Every structure is written in C-alpha cells, then in structure tokens.
Image (tube, rainbow, N blue to C red; front, side, top):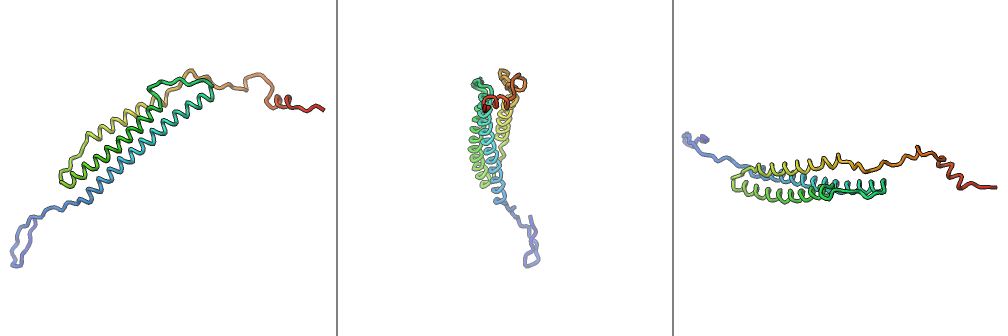
Length: 169
C-alpha cells in the first residue's frame, strides 16, 4: 500500500500491484535451457569420443600383438559411448520439454521447480560415469608384451643390411 496525496491535501491509501518482470524470468529460463543444451552436447561428444577411442585402442592392440582382441559383448567402450550419445539426445528432448513447461508456468504466474528431473539426470550421469571407470582400469592379461630386439643375440641391423648389400669387387 502506498499513501498518495490528492489535490485537496487528503492522503489516500492506494493498492499497488507489484510489477512482475517476466522478461527476466524468461531470460533465466532460456539460460537454463542453454545450460541443459550444452550438457547434452557434452554427453554426445564424450560418448562419441569414448566409442571411437575404444575402437582405436582395439585396433592398436591388434596391430601390436597380431592376435584378435577378445571383448565382452555387453560391457565395451562402444556400448558406453552409444549409451552416452543416446542419453545426450534424451537430455535435449527433456530440456526442450522443460523449457516449454516453465515458459507457460511463468506466463500463468504459477512456476513450480521440478527437483525430480534434476535427480534423474544426476543419477543417470553418475551411473554412466561409474561404468566408465572399469573400462579405463581394465587391462587384458592375455596381451603379450612386444618383443625387445635388443635382447636377441644377433648382428646389429646395420651390419646385417651391409652383409646383404655388400659390393664385391
């Protein structure tokens, strides 16, 4: 309530409605949406990197050991990477849905925060992150180390080359 003095010196009490700054609320909603969007892009990027890096490591191992690489058919870096990519796509969809829901709540003036969605996202990211730990720490014990040529008694490589290609006059 605000006291307002009229032309005759009489003070009247007038009710003033608080001005709601919807523009700031909508901008905050957009910033939140963009944060979720960046998170989903990061999830997709990490998933792609994990899947491709696992494939790269398997190819390197095959090239070094000349043996096919035995992998667990379910728990692989490719599956974890694909899971992260799929989850990133789901996060984009949920972010757009939540943005629209909050937009209309701001317009109606009945905004309600949704803590359940935050807990679900945190839980899924924690689970997927935890699944990456064994992939990082796991080493295949059947990998034979590369052969160290320095321990094999033989002619030096340069001498062996010269013996093959020596010129006789």
